Amino acid sequence: MAAAIGVGVIILIVIWIITIALSLLLLVIPKARYAAPLVVLLSVVVTIVLLVYPRGENRSSDEDIDTIYFGRLALLITLTLFLLGGVSCIAIFHWMTPVHAGHKITHQH
Image (tube, rainbow, N blue to C red):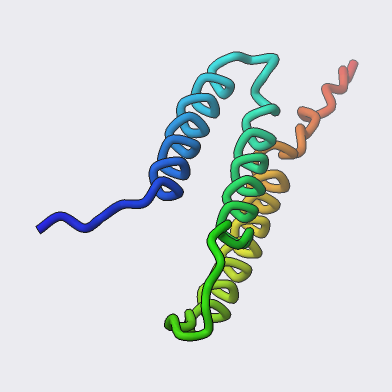
């Protein structure tokens, strides 16, 4: 039995496949290396907008109400904060590693 997949899920899958491919391509190019996080950030923003933006169909009061909407929203916010924290750690400890000077050579006569 296959579960029905909606159009929104397919759009998100395509967006993230393109994001991963484009990020890997940008990481290989030396001058475009720092554009990869921007691509991921753009995809995160598009994903959040698609998840939070309400659907176009009108709901009547007789239909079921999504009771775990706020739980999913809290999970999304938590994951976004952890993503930002992880990207910050990568930026601090990987991209901005200090370059230490070598030992000072002194000539003694």
